[in-house]
Length: 102
Image (cartoon, rainbow, N blue to C red):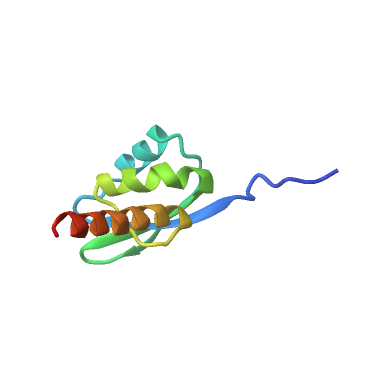
């Protein structure tokens, strides 16, 4: 019999937002609306201008959560393989733009 850990596929997500605009309730509502299961949420650093938050979540939610967080003004500090797709799309878009401007 093989043991499967519930916490096997966790990913740490580091985000930050302007201190004036940050509301913990807004963040938790975004996570709840995205059906993200939070394992931990930690206020990592407070700077004069921004707050950095570390979330530990199931990695399967990252693909849809990252654009949602960015749309609401959160800056994603950590790198994730799910983000590579966005980088590739931007590269392709810039190549297409360059081709169309010839």
